[in-house]
Length: 291
View 1 (cartoon, one colour):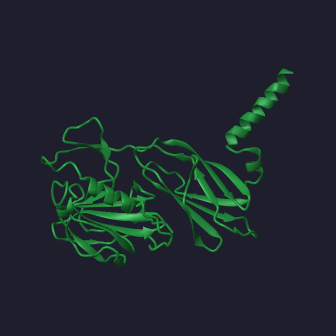
View 2: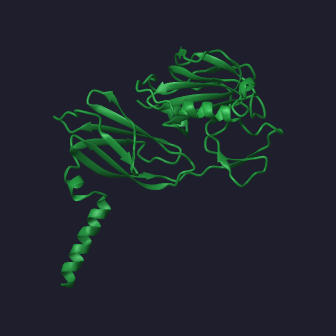
View 3: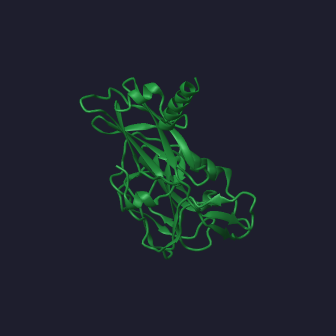
Protein backbone atom coordinates (compact mmCIF):
# COMPACT_ATOMS: atom_id res chain seq x y z
CA UNK A 1 0.00 0.00 0.00
CA UNK A 2 2.89 2.36 0.69
CA UNK A 3 4.30 1.88 -2.83
CA UNK A 4 0.85 2.46 -4.36
CA UNK A 5 0.43 5.81 -2.59
CA UNK A 6 3.98 6.84 -3.52
CA UNK A 7 3.24 6.13 -7.20
CA UNK A 8 0.07 8.20 -7.08
CA UNK A 9 1.92 11.11 -5.40
CA UNK A 10 4.66 11.00 -8.06
CA UNK A 11 2.04 11.06 -10.84
CA UNK A 12 0.38 14.16 -9.39
CA UNK A 13 3.76 15.82 -8.97
CA UNK A 14 4.60 15.12 -12.62
CA UNK A 15 1.35 16.73 -13.82
CA UNK A 16 1.98 19.79 -11.65
CA UNK A 17 5.54 20.10 -12.95
CA UNK A 18 4.30 20.00 -16.55
CA UNK A 19 2.08 22.99 -15.70
CA UNK A 20 -0.93 21.56 -17.50
CA UNK A 21 -4.27 20.01 -16.68
CA UNK A 22 -4.93 16.58 -18.17
CA UNK A 23 -7.16 18.03 -20.93
CA UNK A 24 -4.68 20.83 -21.71
CA UNK A 25 -1.81 18.31 -21.88
CA UNK A 26 -3.65 16.07 -24.35
CA UNK A 27 -4.41 19.01 -26.66
CA UNK A 28 -0.93 20.52 -26.37
CA UNK A 29 -0.39 20.46 -30.15
CA UNK A 30 -3.86 21.75 -31.08
CA UNK A 31 -2.58 25.35 -31.04
CA UNK A 32 0.92 26.54 -31.85
CA UNK A 33 1.97 29.26 -29.40
CA UNK A 34 5.25 31.15 -29.83
CA UNK A 35 6.62 33.53 -27.19
CA UNK A 36 9.41 36.05 -27.78
CA UNK A 37 11.81 36.93 -26.32
CA UNK A 38 12.57 33.46 -25.01
CA UNK A 39 14.08 34.78 -21.78
CA UNK A 40 12.11 37.95 -20.95
CA UNK A 41 12.98 40.26 -18.07
CA UNK A 42 11.05 43.00 -16.31
CA UNK A 43 10.55 45.92 -18.67
CA UNK A 44 10.34 43.72 -21.77
CA UNK A 45 7.40 43.46 -24.13
CA UNK A 46 6.40 39.85 -24.78
CA UNK A 47 4.96 38.85 -28.13
CA UNK A 48 2.57 35.90 -27.90
CA UNK A 49 1.69 34.58 -31.37
CA UNK A 50 -0.95 31.93 -31.96
CA UNK A 51 -1.76 29.79 -34.98
CA UNK A 52 -3.56 26.45 -35.40
CA UNK A 53 -1.81 23.20 -36.13
CA UNK A 54 -1.25 22.44 -39.86
CA UNK A 55 -4.46 21.72 -41.76
CA UNK A 56 -6.70 23.67 -39.36
CA UNK A 57 -8.17 27.18 -39.41
CA UNK A 58 -8.81 29.59 -36.55
CA UNK A 59 -12.35 30.74 -37.22
CA UNK A 60 -12.08 33.64 -34.74
CA UNK A 61 -9.52 35.40 -32.57
CA UNK A 62 -8.08 33.18 -29.84
CA UNK A 63 -8.41 34.15 -26.18
CA UNK A 64 -5.10 34.84 -24.44
CA UNK A 65 -4.99 35.21 -20.64
CA UNK A 66 -1.91 35.88 -18.53
CA UNK A 67 -2.28 35.54 -14.76
CA UNK A 68 -6.05 35.57 -15.27
CA UNK A 69 -6.12 38.81 -17.28
CA UNK A 70 -7.32 38.80 -20.87
CA UNK A 71 -5.02 40.47 -23.40
CA UNK A 72 -6.08 42.24 -26.61
CA UNK A 73 -5.43 39.98 -29.61
CA UNK A 74 -5.02 41.13 -33.22
CA UNK A 75 -4.52 39.37 -36.57
CA UNK A 76 -1.00 39.86 -37.99
CA UNK A 77 -1.20 37.45 -40.95
CA UNK A 78 -3.54 34.91 -42.47
CA UNK A 79 -4.57 32.45 -39.76
CA UNK A 80 -2.12 34.01 -37.30
CA UNK A 81 -2.82 36.19 -34.26
CA UNK A 82 -0.71 38.11 -31.77
CA UNK A 83 -1.04 39.55 -28.25
CA UNK A 84 1.46 41.90 -26.63
CA UNK A 85 2.20 41.59 -22.91
CA UNK A 86 3.92 44.60 -21.29
CA UNK A 87 6.01 44.21 -18.13
CA UNK A 88 7.39 47.00 -15.93
CA UNK A 89 10.00 47.32 -13.14
CA UNK A 90 7.35 47.76 -10.42
CA UNK A 91 5.99 44.25 -11.01
CA UNK A 92 7.28 41.06 -9.40
CA UNK A 93 9.44 38.73 -11.42
CA UNK A 94 8.73 35.02 -11.60
CA UNK A 95 6.05 32.62 -12.78
CA UNK A 96 2.85 33.66 -14.57
CA UNK A 97 0.17 31.42 -16.00
CA UNK A 98 -0.62 31.59 -19.72
CA UNK A 99 -3.86 30.12 -21.06
CA UNK A 100 -4.59 30.21 -24.80
CA UNK A 101 -7.98 29.09 -26.13
CA UNK A 102 -9.09 28.75 -29.74
CA UNK A 103 -11.41 26.48 -31.72
CA UNK A 104 -12.60 25.04 -28.39
CA UNK A 105 -9.09 23.85 -27.63
CA UNK A 106 -6.88 25.08 -24.82
CA UNK A 107 -3.19 25.24 -24.05
CA UNK A 108 -2.10 25.73 -20.45
CA UNK A 109 1.41 27.11 -20.24
CA UNK A 110 3.75 28.96 -17.90
CA UNK A 111 5.67 32.20 -18.46
CA UNK A 112 8.76 33.07 -16.49
CA UNK A 113 9.66 36.76 -16.24
CA UNK A 114 13.25 37.20 -15.12
CA UNK A 115 14.54 39.66 -12.53
CA UNK A 116 16.36 42.78 -13.71
CA UNK A 117 18.56 45.16 -11.76
CA UNK A 118 17.98 48.92 -12.12
CA UNK A 119 20.25 51.65 -10.76
CA UNK A 120 19.08 54.52 -8.53
CA UNK A 121 19.34 58.20 -9.40
CA UNK A 122 18.60 61.36 -7.40
CA UNK A 123 17.00 64.24 -9.31
CA UNK A 124 16.76 67.77 -7.93
CA UNK A 125 14.14 69.98 -9.55
CA UNK A 126 13.58 73.72 -9.01
CA UNK A 127 10.74 74.69 -6.60
CA UNK A 128 7.32 74.47 -8.20
CA UNK A 129 8.62 72.29 -11.04
CA UNK A 130 8.07 68.85 -9.54
CA UNK A 131 4.28 68.52 -9.50
CA UNK A 132 1.91 68.21 -12.42
CA UNK A 133 -1.67 69.37 -12.93
CA UNK A 134 -4.85 67.30 -12.99
CA UNK A 135 -5.47 68.52 -16.54
CA UNK A 136 -2.05 67.28 -17.62
CA UNK A 137 -2.42 63.83 -16.09
CA UNK A 138 -6.00 63.42 -17.38
CA UNK A 139 -4.87 64.20 -20.93
CA UNK A 140 -1.90 61.82 -20.75
CA UNK A 141 -3.96 59.01 -19.19
CA UNK A 142 -6.61 59.38 -21.91
CA UNK A 143 -3.90 59.18 -24.57
CA UNK A 144 -2.33 56.03 -23.10
CA UNK A 145 -5.76 54.36 -22.97
CA UNK A 146 -6.26 54.68 -26.74
CA UNK A 147 -6.45 51.30 -28.49
CA UNK A 148 -6.99 51.50 -32.24
CA UNK A 149 -7.21 48.14 -34.01
CA UNK A 150 -5.17 48.94 -37.13
CA UNK A 151 -1.41 48.39 -36.94
CA UNK A 152 0.31 51.48 -38.35
CA UNK A 153 3.99 50.72 -37.69
CA UNK A 154 6.27 48.47 -39.73
CA UNK A 155 9.47 46.84 -38.50
CA UNK A 156 11.74 48.23 -35.83
CA UNK A 157 11.31 51.76 -34.51
CA UNK A 158 13.71 54.60 -35.36
CA UNK A 159 15.88 56.47 -32.88
CA UNK A 160 14.03 59.78 -32.34
CA UNK A 161 17.12 61.96 -31.81
CA UNK A 162 20.84 61.69 -32.61
CA UNK A 163 22.03 62.95 -29.21
CA UNK A 164 23.82 60.62 -26.77
CA UNK A 165 21.77 58.45 -24.44
CA UNK A 166 22.08 59.92 -20.94
CA UNK A 167 19.48 57.98 -18.92
CA UNK A 168 18.22 54.49 -19.59
CA UNK A 169 14.88 52.87 -18.91
CA UNK A 170 13.88 51.68 -15.45
CA UNK A 171 16.24 53.80 -13.33
CA UNK A 172 14.78 54.24 -9.84
CA UNK A 173 14.39 57.98 -9.42
CA UNK A 174 14.25 59.89 -6.17
CA UNK A 175 13.00 63.43 -6.65
CA UNK A 176 14.24 66.20 -4.34
CA UNK A 177 15.35 63.71 -1.69
CA UNK A 178 11.94 62.05 -1.27
CA UNK A 179 12.75 58.38 -0.63
CA UNK A 180 9.23 57.43 0.49
CA UNK A 181 7.87 56.57 -2.98
CA UNK A 182 10.60 56.19 -5.62
CA UNK A 183 9.43 56.03 -9.22
CA UNK A 184 11.09 54.51 -12.26
CA UNK A 185 12.30 56.23 -15.43
CA UNK A 186 9.66 55.43 -18.01
CA UNK A 187 11.73 55.84 -21.15
CA UNK A 188 15.07 56.89 -22.64
CA UNK A 189 16.72 60.32 -22.39
CA UNK A 190 18.73 61.76 -25.27
CA UNK A 191 20.86 64.86 -24.58
CA UNK A 192 20.37 66.52 -27.92
CA UNK A 193 21.31 70.18 -28.27
CA UNK A 194 18.43 72.63 -27.90
CA UNK A 195 16.60 72.97 -31.19
CA UNK A 196 17.84 69.68 -32.66
CA UNK A 197 15.17 67.72 -34.56
CA UNK A 198 12.93 65.14 -32.91
CA UNK A 199 11.65 62.46 -35.29
CA UNK A 200 8.67 60.13 -35.12
CA UNK A 201 9.95 56.67 -34.19
CA UNK A 202 7.33 54.97 -36.37
CA UNK A 203 4.33 55.75 -38.53
CA UNK A 204 1.13 56.66 -36.72
CA UNK A 205 -1.38 59.34 -35.83
CA UNK A 206 -0.73 62.26 -33.50
CA UNK A 207 -3.25 61.90 -30.69
CA UNK A 208 -1.71 64.14 -28.01
CA UNK A 209 -0.33 67.66 -28.27
CA UNK A 210 0.27 69.37 -24.92
CA UNK A 211 2.02 72.61 -24.06
CA UNK A 212 3.65 73.91 -20.93
CA UNK A 213 1.53 77.06 -21.25
CA UNK A 214 -1.60 74.88 -20.96
CA UNK A 215 -0.54 73.32 -17.67
CA UNK A 216 1.79 70.51 -18.76
CA UNK A 217 4.23 71.27 -15.94
CA UNK A 218 5.81 67.78 -15.82
CA UNK A 219 5.83 66.75 -19.48
CA UNK A 220 6.41 70.24 -20.86
CA UNK A 221 5.66 70.57 -24.55
CA UNK A 222 4.76 67.02 -25.52
CA UNK A 223 3.65 64.99 -28.54
CA UNK A 224 2.02 61.56 -28.37
CA UNK A 225 1.70 59.27 -31.40
CA UNK A 226 -0.67 56.30 -31.66
CA UNK A 227 0.85 53.43 -33.67
CA UNK A 228 -2.14 51.13 -33.35
CA UNK A 229 -2.99 47.98 -31.40
CA UNK A 230 -2.25 49.55 -28.01
CA UNK A 231 1.24 50.82 -28.92
CA UNK A 232 2.13 54.52 -28.64
CA UNK A 233 5.15 56.75 -28.18
CA UNK A 234 5.59 60.04 -26.29
CA UNK A 235 8.16 62.82 -26.76
CA UNK A 236 8.64 65.16 -23.77
CA UNK A 237 10.27 68.52 -22.94
CA UNK A 238 10.11 69.80 -26.53
CA UNK A 239 11.01 73.36 -27.43
CA UNK A 240 8.88 73.43 -30.57
CA UNK A 241 5.97 71.28 -31.73
CA UNK A 242 5.70 70.87 -35.49
CA UNK A 243 2.59 68.67 -35.80
CA UNK A 244 -1.10 68.96 -35.02
CA UNK A 245 -3.44 66.61 -33.19
CA UNK A 246 -5.07 64.17 -35.63
CA UNK A 247 -2.24 64.44 -38.16
CA UNK A 248 -0.83 61.26 -39.72
CA UNK A 249 2.97 61.05 -39.62
CA UNK A 250 5.50 58.75 -41.25
CA UNK A 251 8.51 57.12 -39.59
CA UNK A 252 11.36 59.62 -39.37
CA UNK A 253 9.20 62.70 -39.88
CA UNK A 254 10.24 65.71 -37.78
CA UNK A 255 7.57 66.34 -35.15
CA UNK A 256 9.37 68.88 -32.95
CA UNK A 257 12.70 70.02 -31.52
CA UNK A 258 14.62 69.27 -28.33
CA UNK A 259 14.00 71.65 -25.45
CA UNK A 260 13.92 71.88 -21.67
CA UNK A 261 10.25 72.55 -20.94
CA UNK A 262 8.41 71.02 -18.01
CA UNK A 263 10.24 69.13 -15.25
CA UNK A 264 13.65 69.22 -16.88
CA UNK A 265 17.16 70.03 -15.64
CA UNK A 266 18.49 70.84 -19.12
CA UNK A 267 17.87 70.37 -22.87
CA UNK A 268 17.05 66.75 -23.63
CA UNK A 269 14.42 64.51 -25.18
CA UNK A 270 12.55 62.00 -23.04
CA UNK A 271 11.29 59.24 -25.33
CA UNK A 272 8.71 56.82 -23.94
CA UNK A 273 6.90 53.82 -25.37
CA UNK A 274 3.64 52.43 -23.95
CA UNK A 275 2.05 49.05 -24.62
CA UNK A 276 -1.52 48.56 -23.41
CA UNK A 277 -1.10 51.60 -21.17
CA UNK A 278 2.19 50.53 -19.53
CA UNK A 279 5.56 52.22 -20.06
CA UNK A 280 7.91 49.49 -21.32
CA UNK A 281 11.58 49.57 -22.32
CA UNK A 282 11.77 51.07 -25.85
CA UNK A 283 15.19 49.46 -26.48
CA UNK A 284 13.93 46.12 -27.95
CA UNK A 285 11.57 48.07 -30.22
CA UNK A 286 14.54 50.10 -31.49
CA UNK A 287 16.90 47.11 -31.88
CA UNK A 288 14.66 44.33 -33.18
CA UNK A 289 11.11 45.59 -33.44
CA UNK A 290 7.89 43.61 -33.37
CA UNK A 291 6.05 42.30 -36.39
